Length: 293
Ligand SMILES: [Zn+2]
Ligand SMILES: [Zn+2]
Image 1 (cartoon, rainbow, N blue to C red):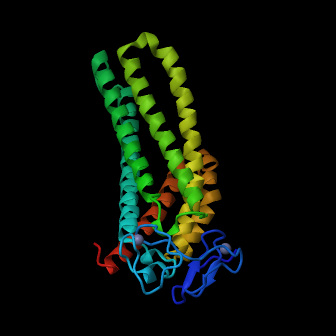
Image 2: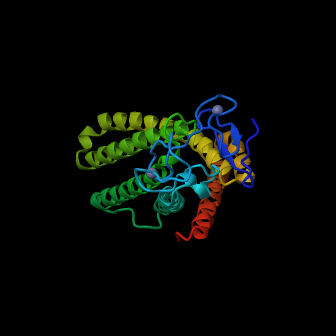
Image 3: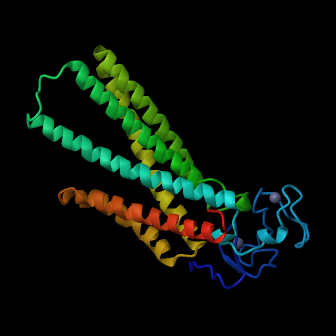
C-alpha cells in the first residue's frame, strides 16, 4: 500500500479503507465507496447534507474546516494539545523509570558489596522497599495516563475508522496494566505487613505480572501502528518508516539484543523514545504555527 498524504493537494484519507482520496469534493471513496462526508472536526457532529459554507449546528465551527486535508494541522486544537501533553508524560515518565531502575540497581550493588552497614533494621528495609514500590507504581501510572491522552479520539473521525482499532487496543491494554500495577502494589504492602501470607500473595502477584506483560506486548504493536497512522498525517515519511521497522527491530533488540551484555533493551528504549520525541516535536511545531502555544 502506497502511504502518503501530499500536503499540496486536497487529500483526505478514507475512514474505512485508508485510501488517499484526492479532491475535497469527493462524496464517496473511489475504492470502497464508503461515505467521505466528514464529521465535525471539533465536536464529531455528522455534517451530511450541510452546505460547505455553513457552520456546524452543534458547535459553530465552519463546515469547510472539516473538509480540509486529513493532516494533523487541520485537526482541533484540543485534540492536538491532548496528544502533545500525553507524549510529554510518556517521555518524561519513561526517562524517570530508567533513572529509578539505575538507582535501584546501584543501591543493590552497594548493599551487597557491604559498603553500607548490613545490620539495618527490618523496618528500614521494609520502608525502603515500600518507597520503591510506590515510586514504580506512580511512574507507571504516569506513563499509562500519558498513553491514554495520546489515544484520545479525534472528533473528525468517529464511526468506522481503521485508526480506531490500534487506538482502542492501546486503551484496553493501558487499563489492564494500571489495574495489575495497583493490585501488585496492594499485594506488596500486604506482604510487608503480614509475612505469613507472603506465599499465596506471591502467586497472585506473579499471575498479575504475566497479564500486565502480555498487555504491554499488545500495546507495543498497537502503539507502533498508531504512530504510523499519525506520521502519515504530519506527513513524516521517515517517522512512518521508523515505526514500521521498529515493529520487528524492537522485539529483536529486546530479546536477541539482551544477550549482548543486556544492551539491546536499552538501545530499543532509546529508539522508542526518539520516535515519541520526534512526534512531539512535530506537534509542538504545528501548535506554534496555529498560535496555540
Ligand atoms: Zn475507502
Ligand atoms: Zn461541531
